[in-house]
Each structure stands twice: as C-alpha cells, then as structure tokens.
Amino acid sequence: MHEFTVWAPGAKKVSVKAGDRAHAMQGPDERGWWNATVEDAGAGSDYGFSLDDNPAVYPDPRSAWQPNGVHGLSRVYDQAAFRWHDEGWQAPPLESSIQYELHVDTFTPGSTLDSAIERLDDLVELGITHVELMPVAAFAGDRGWGYDGVDLYAVAEHYGGPDGLKRFVDACHARGLAVLLDVVYNHFGPVGNYAAKFGPYLTGAHRTPWGEAVNLEEWGSDEVRRFLCDNATMWMRDFHIDGLRLDAVHGLVDRSAIHFLEQLSTEVEALTATLGRRLVLIAESDLNDPRVVRPREAGGYGMDAQWSDDFHHALFTVLHPEDHGYYKDFGTIEQLAKALTQVFVYDGKYSKYRGRRHGRPVEGLSAHRFLGFIQTHDQVGNRVAGDRVEQIVGMDGAKVAAGMVLTAPFVPLIFMGEEFAACTPFLYFADHDDPEMAKLVREGRRREFAAFGFTEQEVPDPAARSTFERSRLNWQEAGEGRHREMREWYRALIRLRRGSAALNDGDLAHTKVLWSEQDRWLVMDRGGVLVLANLGQRAVGFDAPGGFRVALVSREIAGIGGGKIVLPPSTLAVLSSEAE
Image (cartoon, rainbow, N blue to C red):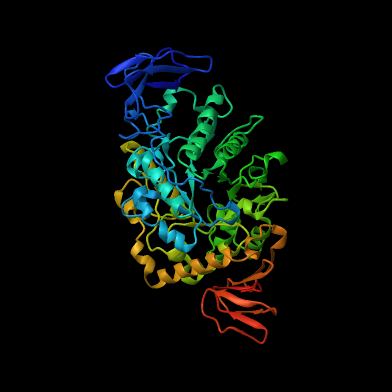
C-alpha cells in the first residue's frame, strides 16, 4: 500500500498510474493537493500522474527516483531501507574547513559516486575536511554540469541514483569527511521540466538569465517555497548531507516580508536541533550584500557563509591582467589588499562593469563567513578553453595563488585537480537530450566568445562527447613531476594552516596588509604569521623581523641574511613566530 500525493492547483482531474492501472485521485484541497491510496503499490513501484483529460503520464515533481531518466516514470523509493554506518557523526566545524569541489562525472574514469569513493583517501591525505559535490539532481541527457536539473528530489541515475549518493556520503563520513551538496533553486533546466505542468513553479512576473523566475512571491508561491525547503531538508535528513551550497541566490527574486533564504535558514536551524548535528548553508551571491550571511537576529538572511568573488577576481587579475566582463573592475594590488581585509572590493563603489554603484561594506562579520578560492567550476569552465590557473600563469604563479588562498582569513575552497596542477581542462559541456536545445547552446557559446575575438573553431561544442571526455581528470598525473610538486605544496599549506592559530583567526581587524603597486609586492600580517608575496617580475627584498622563521616558501630562495629575505619574481613565503 502506498499513498500518492501531488500538488496540481489548476487541475480539474488528476489520476495516478501505478502498475497497469490508473487510479483517480481525491482533491484538490484548499491548497491544491491531490491524494490517492493504492493498495498494490509500494517501494519499487513505477508510477506517474495524468492531468485532466491529457493522456500523457508525467513523472512526480517530488520523485526521489527516476531510474529511466527525467522523461520516464517515477519509482517509489524507501528512504528508510538504506543501512547507514555513521551513527554519532558530526561534521568538522565550517570555520576550520578545507573544502574541495568536485564534479562526479569527470572526477574519475567511472563517472559515478561509487567510483568517486575510490579517491576519497587521496583527499583525506591532502587535508580536505569537506567535499562539495556539484549538483546531482536528475537532468536531461547523460552528461552535464548539473545546473540544468529538473527532478530536484532525484539523484541522477547515471551517477548511481539515490543509493549511490547514500553510499558516497556514508563512505565520506567513515573517513571523517563532511559532504556539501550544490543545489539549484533559482531555475529549472530547459528540457524535462514537467513540474511546470502541475503548477506555477515559475512566474513571468520576473526574468532571470535562465528565463522565467522561480515563483517565490506570486499566487501559489507558498507551495513552491515548501517544495524547495522540503527538498533542502530531505538532502540533510534522508541523505545525511552536512550542508548545501545554494547556486546563484541573486537569481531568487523575492520581495516577501520573509525572504526565502531566511525561511530556509530557519527551517534548517530547526532540523539541526532535531537531528543533533550541525548543518550549514553556503550561498553563491554576486550581490556583495552582507545581509546574505548576517544572522537573522541582526536582520540578515542567516546563511552560514558565501563565496567571495571579489577576492578571486582581485587575486586572479593581479596574476594575469584581463579586462573583459567583470575583470575590467579589477587588476590592482590595492584591490587585493582590500579584499583580504574588507572582503568586498565593491562595497558601494562605482563599478565600470555594471555601470552603477555596487555592494555595501562588511561590518562586524567574521572572515569565516566567506569562502576564498582561485579556481571553481565557474572560473575554469566558463573560460573558452577551460584552462586552469597553472596553465594561465605558470607553476610559480599558481603556487603564489594557492599560498594566498590558504593563508587568507577566509575559508579555503579548492577545485578538483587544482591541487596537482591538472593538465586536463574543465570545459563547459551539456547533453540536453534535445537536438534543438543543443544547437541553441552551441550557437550561444559561439556568440558569447566571438565578442572576445574567438573563432567558431576555437569554441568547443558543449554537446560533443569529446568536450566532456577532455574534462575528465587524469589521476596518473598526480604522482608525477611538477604535478606531485604542486600537490606537496598544497599539502604543506593545508598542514600549516591547520596547525596555526593565527591562520585560523577570522577577525578581519587582525589582518593587516602592506603593498606596493609600483614594485608589485604584498605583505599580509596575520598576527603570528607573515605572508610575503612578490607579484612582480623583479626580485624584492623584505625586512625579516626577529623571532620569525621561514615556515614555507613556494620556490627556492637564498634564505634570510642581514635582516632581509629576498624573493625572486612570482614567489610567496610564509614566516611564522608560532611554536612548531
């Protein structure tokens, strides 16, 4: 016996097809819900819904299992059947985390969550504490980044389905690794979005870069918000996920008295108390608005942290000047210094890129509310060639970048392969299971990059399988030559950070920065740790204060002599006065 429910507020008649029979559903209630109890259905039964007199049978918008893809029938999934082994698990604190973003399909040759388990010990040995999965919700086609999900409750079957995700989380917890999951609540994918057949999940009242906005404030929005909040808590409760990364929250258009993010943070806080383990929410936002991470008690939305784009842009453009898109707003060492001490470079300043003032100052918040990085899926994959930092600025520059990320006051985030200077690119790829959509995406990418002078031949076809295959990590590299050297550099930086009280201090007032735009150097004072960076093309001499030793250096130097430490071009050194 199984009770089926579905929200379809505009329908006059709804039936559920389970097995070979269609069963009329009762409803709608005052909120638009329909229900039916089917005696001979249960775990493993395939089902779908028909609306009014339309003979089509659609998958359940809340389906937890789509074994035959997003166009197929849903299957009843028993969340309680999986045997967990992580009783008593508690995630490491977010404030002390070292996060690692990975894409399931290209992380290993097996392209599944089970095959990803085979590499978890490498991450533990490196010093990672939190693994962040790019989206796993079911999407059309058999490959993609995951940001075109349409069945938000179902794990993509080719990744391993719901049990595959549970096995992965269980394996992570067994190794002391927390798991964060990237979720997309700002839009549905363009192919296979059958949820829109059932109710007003989208609204034409607002437009976003992906089309109509998710309905968070118009008629029927209570149930849409419920749909999203229930999805978030499902991942944490039923899949033991330790936190969520919320994609592009600036795309959530909500003028309600209680913003959706505030509602979500309230419900997750209650779930934290219920489960007795810490759960976190991390936002991606380009608003430069500290309300996103300010506690609700102080008038904020209550997110635990957010990605810090300004830090990335400032650091990247100092290493490799670029003047297109948002990079035109960056490029000075002064801006990098401001990002390190004040988080937002644009905190009410005029932005040339936007043609208006942007942001507001960060005041009274810990740096641990922000994630710092030099590479992410966006920052690599949205480049025409998917090239990584080491391929752009060279080994020495990439080491400096890693050193800045892992000694900055922010929570560090590493993108898969970054730690061993992977030669493989991470390109944009998408199999939308629709030839017309594939054509539109291909032509859109070509138009986008034509504006920067790239020919059609230089822009990889997102729909081509070869584009996807080229993006798969080659793990054999990790133990060889310069790749091994880079991995050891990351490992040493992480070990230093984990053992340093100064580097784990999130008080922005305790981070001081001196710099020279002309001579292109920067000194970051973290208290008991000094970070010296020569970002120029000539050797630079720094005063070496007494009581400090050289803890790490990114390339060979002559050492300290006469109270001076001389760094060659593109070199970073970490000096420490803390006990070893």
